[in-house]
Image (cartoon, rainbow, N blue to C red; front, side):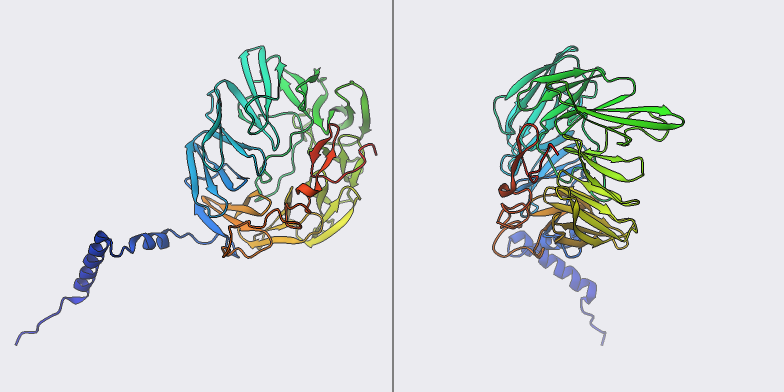
Length: 486
């Protein structure tokens, strides 16, 4: 009798596939969405794992935490995602994007290159809050938004707005137009920040607007009071000079060649009166390149402080307002990060990094490191990157307490009051400070942010309970109160 063969393995698989298709078509059971989620699940970009991880459409140009949203700028579009879940909230075509405002009043300015105007969007919904048709450039800060309009080659105005304001706070006239005024945050004459490997330059987001801004226009420098819009000075720099506006002062850096070396002189004046306030010689603020004494760069520093190299080869931090030496490093120590309140320095033996407080010029904490360790300070913590093994950590800048530590090859893209966005290629993810990064059972990631003692909370540096009136214009800022007159 002939052997009777069954359907075989291929037949069984075919029948099973037909059954699955029928069940999916009738709505009784559909395994395909779950299967696709499993297929597209990317390898976690850190250990421990992030709260959420998403693949975006292209490599991010910038990432900013804006309240409850994460704004991602890409080459030809901008999108926002939920800080809690990573779910996309909205997407829009744009060539540039910049975030102004703080946690409660953030807005997103977007526009197209070589096209006048911009739209101001709500970061959570993408709705247009205000539309401007004739602006050529926008500057974004934590408490102010500036835009420039030019009716002609010698007829430009600068306007200041609250981030969600409907009417300008003031408007100032600036003669001429700078060809570099384009899109978001064109160059102003301030300081050049220290950078860190694997930490994005804009990781801290928007900063409070300085009391004075220096706008380069037609080879001259126009110093504008950001509280009133008054143009305090219109200065033509000398042939050997580099001008910068730091800490409410107009800083003049003179470099001249003598016997094969560059001799530097730094003076600072009050733009309102024109009077010289302080003067120092022999400090190289790194405005000139190694080829000669021509000054092509802004001085190194951050907000109200300047970084220089003394004639004895030791790095120093200067108060831009008073000219005081706030910190002088030992020989072979290397400054990695600085803001108005803290510094992070690598030790001379390159085996540790040290956190110091400028108020008291003393060590606050020490952390093991090597010659490849880098750091950057933000209002919410100091970001530390290491290699071999590749790690990212965020530590409290006053105590050195570790807020989060990750084994990852990703970059730090944005830091907020409750956590950090990291990214590798097209993958981005969110990690929380001071807690497991498993999704919380009772609340969204970042729940409890702003609580007393939490990073960014009322009792933490940079929180609402730590604000002071400081600086020449008595602006509110998170830095500790200190004697500006030395």
